[in-house]
Image (cartoon, rainbow, N blue to C red; front, side, top):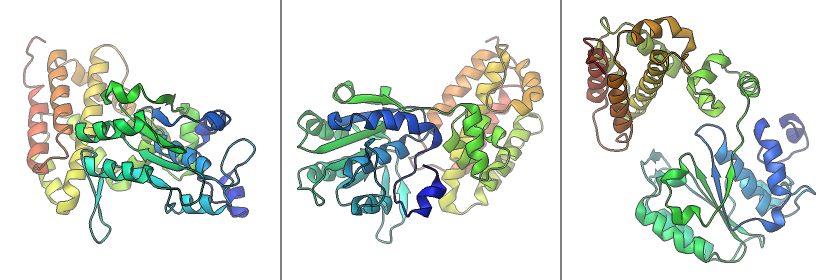
Length: 350
């Protein structure tokens, strides 16, 4: 059903992304045998969370459609649509203060999981089911994962858990073994590009390349401020001798204090994609993320040692893992750019 038709008849069903409809229909056709624990896996930015919430709405719907999908009209569908269903819990790495402001954490801690376990033991409010979505599940710390394990082993009746994971290999095998696995569908480049254009994104082909083919990430990257910073940084990376790490640090310092870590996260993302394209070009391949800068990448790839690129990539990944910890974004960014510039100062024979 199109968004327009849904709005016209007053539906409050969560709209699936175009590339998810067939997989969702196939899964919900067996809703009578729905597993107590479902692991939805796939790379970041393809809509796994949206798919999980659609399944949750279908499981909670009071008058489901013949194909198992949510009706979009019953009270339960309305509550899910509004994010206020009493029988649905969403566990994410977020912390909310008294004013409702959210802070993104680097892990899902044990307390929210314990609250989730308490929720599963309660009676339902709407006499349908209880559903919990954990996203991304691999961010559960060891205590949180251990706490969830007992509920997975002995799930209460009419209780369904859905784990959304970008990196299921990071989940404990004991948890994975107790879940049915569903690989989230990915769109073709044509479908993803069309969807981005429908959302009003400029240069959808370029955005999709920058996101490695992940349309939701591409849509997030379409933000004009993020694109401006990207263009400034890529221009500097293309000319390492003339780049100024201190200038980038000053730009980061110019943002509000609460925004600087997010800007650093973007800098790390662009550095990782640029470094990946450099490595691909040095190996005789084509750039995946920044094909429009193939000429600059080709010139740089001829000057850098592959071992040095590998070590630099490891450093970037290590720094990305520390984003949730206290740090000074300006100093981190400056150090990473000084290290990048050093890649071209000499060849180390790697």
